[in-house]
Length: 305
Image (cartoon, rainbow, N blue to C red; front, top):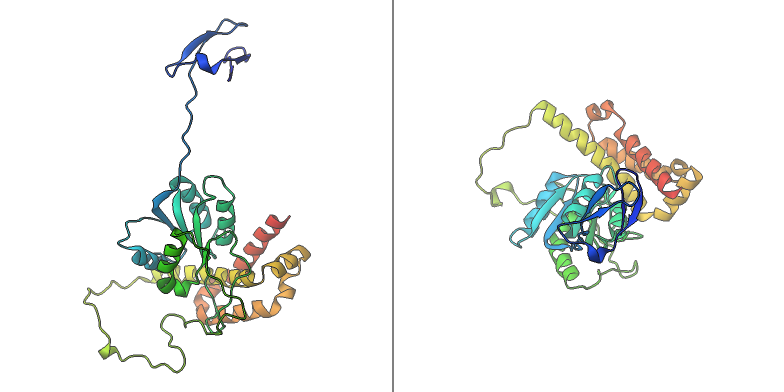
């Protein structure tokens, strides 16, 4: 090994075999400074923890849903709500499994997947990518790429598919995928609180209810903050949905600088949905829709350059 004299900056070559863990003393041949050199400690390579699962999602309700699904399985649950925090916790905690939302703020989920799979510490980490289909009236589609993830589960299917997916991943089996010809053209379930056409909602009186204390009503400021986060999350979901199913076309439009022209119909459709779901009061605060699109395109342009 090579050590540097702190006084005269002379580089000294020291035989590692002559060093002890407590340290050995050497005299600098140039300035006679006595150096205490310790044998370097070899860091043991850390392995992924089979007891840890990372849930990265910007919606606390979805995090709670996943926690409920995994309850009783002995996992230590680590949660995160943005891409930067997800990277930090993944590298620090080294969970064996990450369940990652595509539309994470700060660093998008598909980019997190690529980065984790590209690092030696986390390349063996199993990842489940979770996109949200913003328009539940469209038929279910398969993404162009899993971006390094081991499986793909749309948000509204987590409760029915996650446990089976984890079991399959632990067993080392590849994710099941259907070709467009094999895939049934079945409409995705409606958003929470909306019944599919032709199905009647069960009368409230006949549905079992759990006894619980009345929840405290959120104040005006809490409602405002919640709606702002909902607006930002929906805007990110829309742009990520467009990218997930048109990644090559989006990349090319970003390179050409004509994304809004190429995807004019999709942007118009997404904006209409956004305006229908987000109250005017929230939309007056800021253009969260355009902000999400511009931020995404700026990040994509930087990654492609």
